[in-house]
Length: 406
Image (cartoon, rainbow, N blue to C red):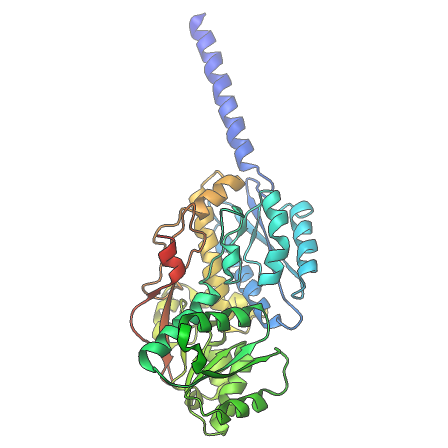
């Protein structure tokens, strides 16, 4: 009799344990076979070029699903177009959470849109993971514990350029042409902060709209200043136009550009590789068209991903790299979650990445997070284009943000 009672108790406890485990797994957006992930991208509008990041992420998860998914679950990546409108981003995010029943939001693009949805997601305790913006205010777990950045700080990128100028070109005159939006202002502000008392060496700076039809005029004005250093912050297409115009004017300053504009395929080749020789940027990702990584990317099934990406309409190879690397990071987090895909555990695992070396990160760049460290990538490498490939300038640089998190 006692043996029979003990058996019944053991069965009851096992069923209770199974029930708890099932409940844990069956968080909204999770079934035995699927994980639903939400995303917002500018697939149309003035920033349409960056919508290619979302197409790359979709292609990455398609590739992962064909290989069996993550811990035997397929990823359903649901991405909508907000046309770079913050109010639309909020409406679509609500739809993704309340109607599409996603587990989490991942990689949504742009600072204004992520600001618009941050409070809603944090109040609902819904992960807002690896946002596609380098704004420092989206990496503060003390205020928004469900929001985590991914890429390096935009302002820190500007400070790195300032440090490079001070080290190699002290006393030289500087000009800047920057995109008149939150991104451009942050990068230019970082340059000013980094230069400190010698920011007076910035003789002229011009803010331009992304659809500006007078870039050639701006470049002419900057040349007439007599500056030896030229900082550009904008999109790949505008970067190509600016590099060509400077060459046409026979103006050859030290040319520094932001990393999101530094695609060989989308900026340097259209500008003319001979014109682009000497361009400097600070980056953390490999360039898909850099021959230095050709064999390595083939070994990692890069071509299989690119085929899917191209069929999805992807054309911007810098966006392909960015989307692939961000999605790869999320896949690592979900893998670490195992069978516990509660939102709490997703955030716990996202804040538990230690020396993670994604396949697309440059050598020396590693991802580290912690309970008070919500900026996964805190290093950049200065590189210079030699007309064919990106050549490193020194070692990976730790940002001030990185040092503050130690």
